Length: 339
Image (tube, rainbow, N blue to C red; front, side, top):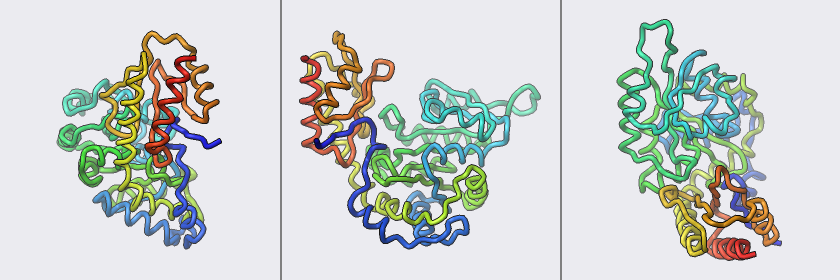
């Protein structure tokens, strides 16, 4: 059976070109800094984002937690959206690794940051050490550049750095019709994933000022992220950065087509305000089938999907979910609803 996997874009398989590049990659010991492919990837990523330097890290969560660990002092407070990946899906790592407290806000914007920056001089209060922005958001929407600019300006006026969780940074840039560097300019440091929609099998990038990256490199070693012959992982990252970032618009088109097809099914309500990138969020009204049964019915038809979270379903498109697969997914889901 030919499987279609819409659980996430983390399930993407490396492209044939990536597999070839992995086999042929020039390698060295990256802890010594002499893996030429890693060095090339870090330089290319820094240039693409308009930053002075970059660091190859194993995962997006690793990159975010390394950023917090490098920016902050223990006991600092970090302002972040309450539905962000750092709050929801990083296993409470901020408390364990960086020793910081997260201060979640319902809606992250300039006013939210301004009103939550801790005033100096009161020994009862923690120091506000960092503001974290997520774009694209894991909920499928994109933060406008104007909002990013507001947050940056408020934080800069208070002397507080901004970190951008850009796990799907290139999806956000594609949706906004700008270069990734235009988003990155509103943050001191940026993390983005080479996996997910960019399809590399492993790895993320943390980019920022040279001094910051130098400190982060040592802390990466402390966290167990010092890799040896990592060129075999960096090689597909170069393809992800150069080629796969240019085709993300196809995934967005396919997601919107899938949304249209799902909306034709009885009881399916698509959340159009969460349809900026390659994710389709929807709920089922007046349909009382057990979600696990629906997932099983899809699986029987060769489609892997996650059950809903808090009543909300999510299907994700990627390079292995094209126009034909979208049609098949919608048809299979329609059949599952009727049984």
